[in-house]
Image 1: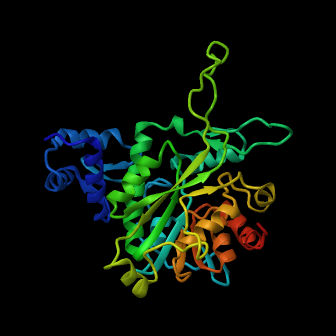
Image 2: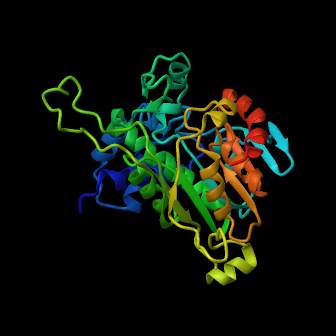
Image 3: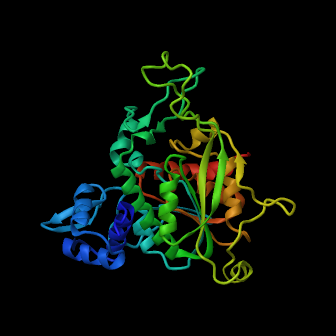
Length: 370
């Protein structure tokens, strides 16, 4: 039976999970065949070559390893780290998320709320430098409107099949590391994009996490709705894509130990906290673009509003007890939301510029009235 490219990709990535370095192509072929079968050696060789550089890196004749660029792989060695910022029950670490997760004990985190780089490439060093210089690149710099400068938006329609493969490998590895550090029954909430959420969801499920639904952040954005470029007059009644009016936040859970009530008693996890006795937590949340006041405090291109974040962070710990983790902390808005609702939280961020912003922004954001 001929295997799909996706299964081949995941089998190769899983093999490298157990490697501390590179591997010979004949060993990769043997392990992939043992795992899924039905894959010709030439298909595996082609897959490795076609995704180098990017997902894989050639280290020598017939030898490969997972790529070590900014977002595809982490440092193998974990160094003991001190937080870059501490304020009461809030800690922020400057680190690659994979390195930090490897050094964390099993069953030590009770929930994850995170807003990752949707397509990975938009937060690479190259694209961030372009963004900060106002040069665009992957980022679309919208024109000012009604006297207001619109925030830049990453263009996910520019991603290539290779970019999609890199995403799948990245989030599969992330899911496996996250699962290890989470207690049973812990929930994971991951911000995504309508064009990419299926790739992220598939990777999280392949990593052993249970799908529990999607939280719909109902918000109007500047994405989509445009007429065909350079043919807008000829096709004035046509939109290339629908105007985006929502943002998916994928909801997953680490498998339970026993029933939900058993898990709640032992691990304090397994469900979602209700906003009140009369009302359960719902999967559609009306929202608005982030307020100017918040953007002045925390300058980040993907800043989410406190009004929304506080609702989802409040829900993520069913008994209000435990540690909330954000592995892509950015300017610290999720940590600020956790601080505002009285939760202990940990953030991990690798960009030194955003670390600087977060140090001053977390407390200020947490004290805002919403």
